[in-house]
Amino acid sequence: MKQAEAASPKPKCMATLNLKNIKKVYPHSGGERKNKKKDKDAGEKKVNLQVTEEGVVAVQEFSLDIADKEFIVLVGPSGCGKSTTLRMVAGLEEISGGELYIDGQLMNDVEPKNRDIAMVFQSYALYPHMTVYENMAFPLKLRKTPKEEIDRRVKEAAAILDITQYLDRKPKALSGGQRQRVAIGRAIVREPKVLLMDEPLSNLDAKLRNQMRAEIIKLRQKINTTFIYVTHDQTEAMTLGDRIVIMKDGFIQQIGTPQEVFDHPANLFVAGFIGMPQMNFFDAKLEKDGDKYAVSVGGCKVELSPEKQKALAARGVAAQDITLGVRPNHIVLAGSGDNALTAKVDVSEMMGSEVHLHASTGGRDVVVIVPTMDMKSDAFGIGAEIHLTFGGNVCHVFDRNGKNLEF
View 1 (cartoon, rainbow, N blue to C red):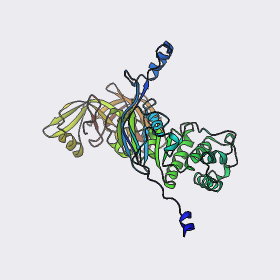
View 2: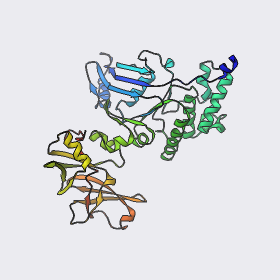
View 3: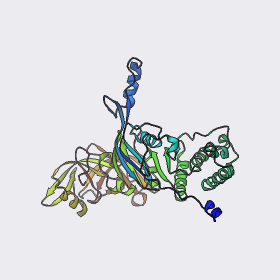
View 4: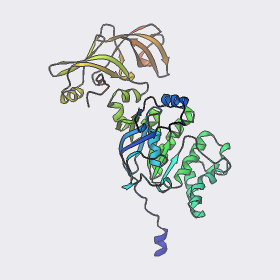
């Protein structure tokens, strides 16, 4: 009976994370040792970050609750604080303020090795003199794991990642995608509570990135762990994450599912960052006639959908100047006599099943996606006049400060 109990696998621990008002401040460098050149370089690199008497604030007021086995993606432009946040979770950066909990335990001052976290870096960080097997086994050897257990875990991870045939090779004999799989394998053999990934696909070409995205989705189904993934690529964020955390200048801009942030962006930054090609923006007016709302731009007037009418009325939104957002695939071609915007084609990009028309109207650039079956091959040359319209259900209405007026 005792032998049977000993052989039974240990239940997997929960891996919830709670980040409460996390903050990271990099103190100003010491007085006499800093020179003007360093000050100038630092100023250029941190131009969008808040500088206080304490120092440069890289992350502030970051609060997020992560459920067990959830896949969270932190996304944003370079310098927005996403990698710094990840490194604070890992223990590689000191937390300047706030509290980090893993499974209800405060982790602010816990050493990285004691957090039961594994991290995959952008640069692979493999040992060149070791084989794939030895690279993957190394963290287990450091923990003095029995050889039989090491062998089992390494071969199991290699099978999951489809790199069993490469176990005897050195990293230099592998492609970039294969090396990244080895780096991921080295992390998952530890069976960590939390797996952190810091832009792991950014060194790969476009085709390999697509393949590795699919591999990570498959991997997520096979291992019981919580993922936090950092990227600047919104395509990765949309395809991988259960929820996306969009960051800018150290602040969270919006948290939601990929569909939520695509359909209901909280502000202009999110609207422009999520979606490819990015959303078109127009200087427009929000008009109110009785209890009905409409948007007016360049002589084109469109009544908003009932859902949007209801959201604006519930917030008591008044008629005002706005920034109107419409995605390229939501703009359609119209006839010259219709209630439509007039635009001039600047560039026409053939993309196979569709054509991306880059045009200008009212001093703004606009991108329109037109299915090739809906147009003649020579219909829209450079300088051609086109007429555009859109439905009231696809309008995104932002005030002049960039906030979505529906929320």
